[in-house]
Image (cartoon, rainbow, N blue to C red; front, side, top):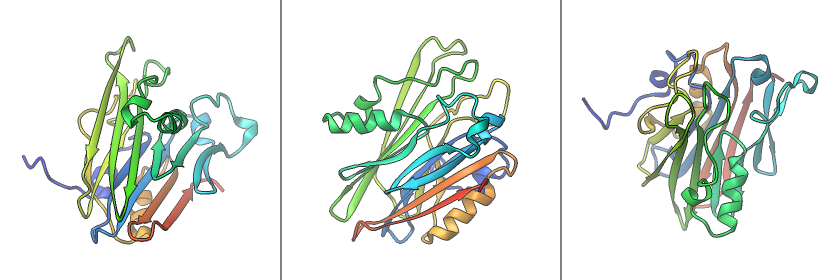
Length: 239
């Protein structure tokens, strides 16, 4: 078994009907850019009734048809925000929790200590989060997953991963192993995904690999390490 094997987006996604929500962080093969991607999927009408919007460099989930919103509490949130030299990417309103924590001088992990998995038993959807921290011409990144300790949702287990970027390597963290009832929570370390130098190719490969019926929206951001300039792509199934 090759524990350092790196798989393509297609290998990781094409045969999985429902990985849920997913975060990819890493570095382009040429070593020049930091990569951040976030996608959402949905099975219910309430979950599928969403789009991504980008405003002043921040990304939000919003209802596609406001008249059809049933419960906004777990589906409407800021998914991507910046604080100073940090970029925050999460699958819920813990984006704001991390932002507030960094502002108060807390670390990424400390900021999330007040949060747990989502209260949507019996699935107990994990909260997944990512943080890219930029320095002069370089960056590091961290990922976190908060998930239930058991089928009853009686306690929260917390896992944080800190990475040194490697050219061409991304780490992929998603909420579910696959589809199911209840939906099985993601297990193990973030998966190793091969990244692309070209943002359009990366966006196309991620989007086309997601299940056609369940995919909703995708956001991809490439940050030039030399200049700090960001290039973004946003894809919505609706609209």
